[in-house]
Structure formats: C-alpha cells, structure tokens
Amino acid sequence: MTILLFAGPQQLKAGWVISEQSNDAFGNRSFYTTFIQDSIIRFDKPTSISIINFNSKLVTLIFAQHRSYWQGTANDLSRTTTQMAEQQLQKLLAYAPTNQKEKIKQALESFKKRDETPDSLRVFPEVTVKRTGKTDTIIGYPAAEYEIIIDSVVKQLVWVTQKVKPYHEADIDRIMSFSKALNPFAIENSLSHSKEYLKLLEKGLILKSVNYTSDGNKLVTQVKEIRQMNIPVAIFQIPAGYMETSIENVMILDTNNNILNPKNLFPDDSGSNDGLP
Image 1 (cartoon, rainbow, N blue to C red):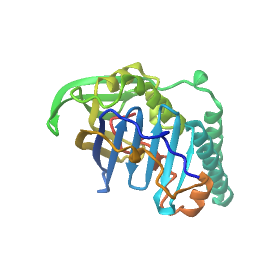
Image 2: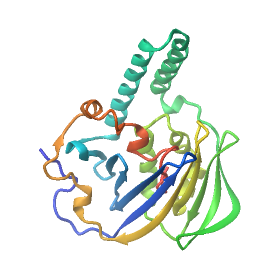
Image 3: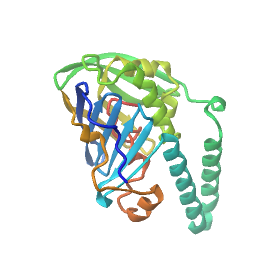
Image 4: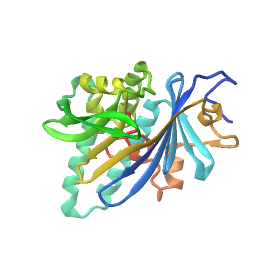
C-alpha cells in the first residue's frame, strides 16, 4: 500500500532547491540537495532520502536500493534507532576483549541514563553565538561570520546571509524539535535550547559552515546553488511501487551502506548543515 504525503493535486507556493557540497579533512566529498515547499522538506543525501512533513508531523525514509520506505513520527524513529543502538552496544560488549569491556559498560550505562532523563531535568552546555565582524560573499550573497561556542570551545563557524529566507520562522522551532527527536545525543540538542542560535537561524540561511568534530575532523559545507521554483508534488511523495518496510528490516538488508546511521538520515554536527540545525 502506498501512502502519499498529499491527499491530491494542489496549487503550491514557489519552493526552494538548495544544493550543497561537504569536504572533510581526509579528502572525502559529499553532495546534498534540499527541497523546501509549504513546510515540507526533502533531504537528499548520498545514502538516503528523508522527507519531513511538518503539517502532518510525519517523516518518510526512502530506500531506493530496496524499493521500499518507512513512515512514522519523529518519536517513532527516535525510539527505534535508540533501541537498535543499545542492542549494538550490547553485542559489542559481548564480544569485546576483556580490557575493553569496562569502557563499553560505562558507555552503555551513560547511553541509558541520557535516554531516560527528560530535557527538563538535563543540564545543557552553555551556547554562545558570537559575530566575528568578518563578512564574505558566497555565491553572490553577502554573509556575516559567526562563531558557535559551546562550553568555551568553538564548535562551528557559520556564514549567514539575510538575503535568502527559505524557512518560515514558525518552522525553525519545529525543525529543531524534529532534529532533537531524531538524534537526542547530537550537538543540535544543545543548540535547540539556545535562543541566540534560534535567532541566528531566523535571520536567513547558513551559506557555509565549518564544523569541528570530536574526533579532530573538520567538515566544511557550502551552498553551491540556490533556486526558487515550483517543485513538483511528486518530489514529496513515495515513489509508485515502493513497499512499506521496518527500520529493522532495512538494517539487516543494508548493513554495509550504513544508511540508518543518524549522520546519513538527517543533518547533524558531523554532516551537512543545510542551513539547519
């Protein structure tokens, strides 16, 4: 059974198509495309397609290599991926060398504790957004440079233009909440609690970002092209003939491509920024 994200043909407002490129310190390169229209966003990444409909509050993951899809809420996806991550840690613990078991046990306990602690009881790192005073012109748009500082450490540099605003201000909070539900342990969970950071996103679009990851890598993401156009409704629909599947089934079928890694499902601190959290 095919579930469409729209009930039928509609007259839609002009949307946005944003093309980006990411490069890391090891020479790896990835390309991304984001489609935005009427509070519906599609992220095309090298190993996955994600469609987030903020009107229906549904997320759809499309697995082209298996002609299948999964659809549910952000909380459904978060719960499933969290359970799978915990199972993977349990398996790792079972087969790990004796001298590494204690470290894995500690990681597993920390994982469980963080998952069970509601945001209202958690202490989040201090986030500071600092304008450096530097500016640049990126693909023809003027952009101001900002430092994103978390607990006194510069985690990101971003260049924001106010000349392009593809996201409705009302969507920013929903985007942050969705990102948090997908990956509650990512850097965005801290950023989503920063009013300064939310105001920065409301100003326009991040055209370039430099993300410093915990493993010492540096990921540079830059918008290469921005187009405003009427996006065909089919872009936000499940392709005809695709069958519904479970996350667990896809994980078993495609472990080599690692398409269910949160880094491949949604932009995060070690992936494409897309002008989003």
